[in-house]
Amino acid sequence: MARGASRDLTAAVDSPAAAALRGALELVVVVADARARRPWAARERLRSGAAPLARRSGESNALWTVFGPTNVALHALSVEMTAGDAVEGLRLADKIDVSALPSRERQFTFGLEVARCYDLRRDDAAVLVHLLELEQLAPEDLERSPLGRQLVVDLVRRVRPTYRRQAAGIAERLHLL
Image (cartoon, rainbow, N blue to C red; front, side):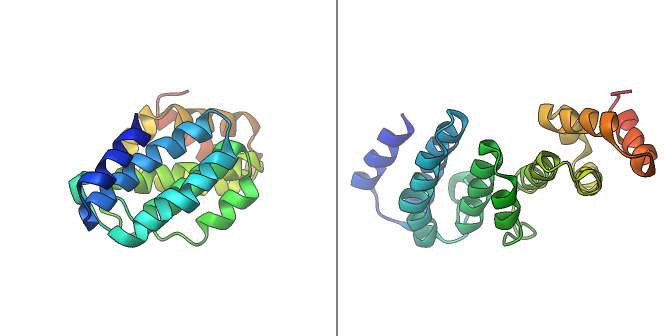
């Protein structure tokens, strides 16, 4: 459906706002491909579909899409995290600056996915740092996020004694202990 809507928009309107909307639709397909365990298709759609539209639209929030080069980069990180490639995900994350994004949700998702990449590597100190940042950024989102809650539970189960108090503190504040 998203692919068809994007094609229809191409024929109807050519403007930066239309490019942002088309790009947002392309990202829906990217997420679907990544979740269906087709990371190669998701990467190709990012490269050939979303990235050119992001260059056309620039950083924008046309029709509340928060679409642009940064959001495309965030989705590239998401594809790698979903595929289990923590090294590539973290490499991509190092190049992304989310501070100017108008969406706290996108900033939160970025931090959560970075935490998950560190979790895949069993780098508990880094997971803890990112969870603490997420708790400051959006405590209610962390409390309601299935992935965030799972990261906290897993961290409490395996954390070294050095970090146990901080990990338990997050778990208690999220009502997981």
